[in-house]
Image (tube, rainbow, N blue to C red; front, top):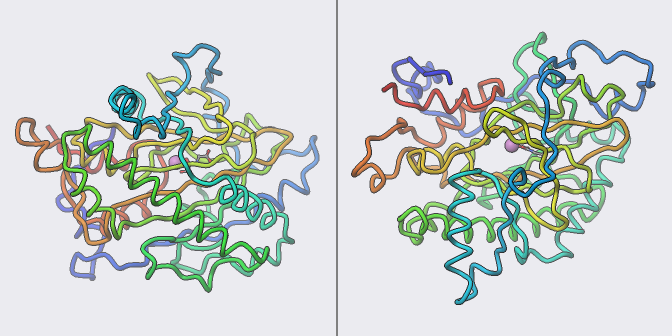
Length: 375
Ligand code: OGA
Ligand code: NI
């Protein structure tokens, strides 16, 4: 893993801004719609070279048939059952330590809320391109229709279009930028965001307890904690083994909850240097530990590299809800977890941390490597 050797990340990345990050993070260069490109490609056509990703083909993927190849399943409901809570909570702790990924069932987010969200996503991406382009990301902004992490005209591109919004805290919502077609989009995103935020906070309370931290302190850290939604649309690709839907990365969140909108698999996680396909459990969320929790827990929980692939036939949709700490928080190992162990990561204010994240190309866990202290 890369080791960061610079002096001071916060100052380095913000020349001329007194070392303080601004609230709008660096945006991405505009790119063409992949959905529009995919619609015009015939099977015999070659994929434009900017999308060709040799790594997609060169690394074998394990399709889980045995339980030990499959990410753990956590039953959220059981965490509240006086008789089952302790066992389920230990299972959660092990999943966070050993996998960094799990599927969450019986999560209590109403079916109607999920179905409404799925409906508006599918309808939005069916709109003609010029209508979607009305919502395209403005220069320097991350919200809207477009792509993230593109910084040069030469950079290889992901086979996907995205639609992204900040959804929490409420005062950071720019609802005027949210789609109005389909007409239920704003309502659907609002309800979904509230439910998922509640779920993430609650789950993180159990995780804090498992780490020996005070759940009330965690709750305070999340009260005004950032939530953003990245809606991914992965169009089919005639040469699906030559492209990647989403480059390998770990999330810069505390906790991410991913909804697989249609039952098309595509998410892969890296474990013991091999890629494993995640088979979506119907109705479940795929939960994963993000870099911020790896740092807070001083490495007790690990964020795991993952990526998304496409297929030749079907479009795939997913929604990743990223949850972070309060915008004025400091990202660093929790003081109680470095009483006995030395800190393995540096500390940085959250805004600077996120600005740094959005100014680096997606490249596995190399970003987190820059937060590691040289030992
Ligand atoms: C993400 C992500 C996975 C998926 O958006 O960060 O990892 O299945 N998505 O689309
Ligand atoms: Ni991710």
